[in-house]
Structure formats: structure tokens, C-alpha cells
Length: 205
Image 1: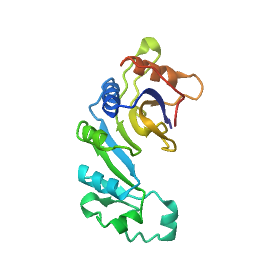
Image 2: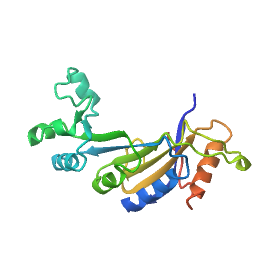
Image 3: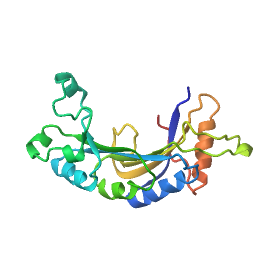
Image 4: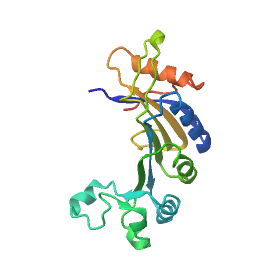
């Protein structure tokens, strides 16, 4: 079974520019079956309420494994997720469960990207485009790839693990991970070249 690996190809402090570059990269591939998903970490009550207003179809959840251990019955529903209309607006309730994550998964292309990029603010978040298909480039020994074709846009972080807060936003292209021949870097470099960019850092898995 293959795995994808992500290479950073663009970085900027302008979220709208980052989104534009990410979309250019998506357009290099076949978008017929592509879907888009978003996810954002919210650390304050005002941010939770703002995002609930901006993304009324989002789902809110906790990523606190210790909390699941303390109370596996999940009386709040936040372990599996609460739809925005059902999320309590009580500040006391919300503050006791921070940080919360808000997500919308597998949406049609073009349906949420602009609104999300405009509303993510100072929070760590991500837009990712999946179910793409990278084209054949036989003269470069690059071959059609669907299973691992993906583009990610990280907001206020440079890591797919969200373990380093940053003041900028990073676009990554995902390709099939190569174990020996370096073809993943060659593939990522070619894709970046198609939009006038280049690989700018080490890969992430």
C-alpha cells in the first residue's frame, strides 16, 4: 500500500494569495472527482462563536484524548462532533471544553475555500483538496497518480501535525511516497514548476 508525502512549495503571510496558489496547483491535476475539506483549531470562546457564525454547517469536536478517558460516555457529544446549529453558545460551557476544532469534510470544490480563508484569522487551520489525479509526464518518468494526489494549505502553521505556530501560510503538494529512487521529489518539483514555484523545504508525512 502506498502513502502520500507532502512537499512545501509556497509560503506567504497573505492568506488570499496562499489560496490562489493552492488553487493553481489543484488545477494542474484532474479535478473531476476532487473534494475539499477544512479544519481549524479554536482556542477562545469568541473565536468559536465567530466561526460558528461564519461556517453554519461546520462540525465542532474535541481532540483531547485525556477527556475521552475521563468520560467515555461523551455527554457533550464533542468527542464525535456537534453540528454548528446544535452547539451551545453558553460561554461557561464552551470555555470548559477549549480548544475546539471546527471542520467541514468532503465538500464540492469552490464551495467553502474563500469563506474559510477569510475567516480562519489567527487560528491554526487547513484546507485540503483530495481525490485529485496528477497527469502522466513520461519524458520525466512521472506517471499518473490518483491515490496520493492532494494539495494542502496550512494557515498559521508550517507543519501538517500543527505542532508549530507560525505567522505565515504554507502550500504543500502531496505525491506518492518513494522509498528509494527519489521520484517523489522529482514529481513534487515538476508539479510546482507548472505554477512557477519550487520545492522550498523538506517533505512531511
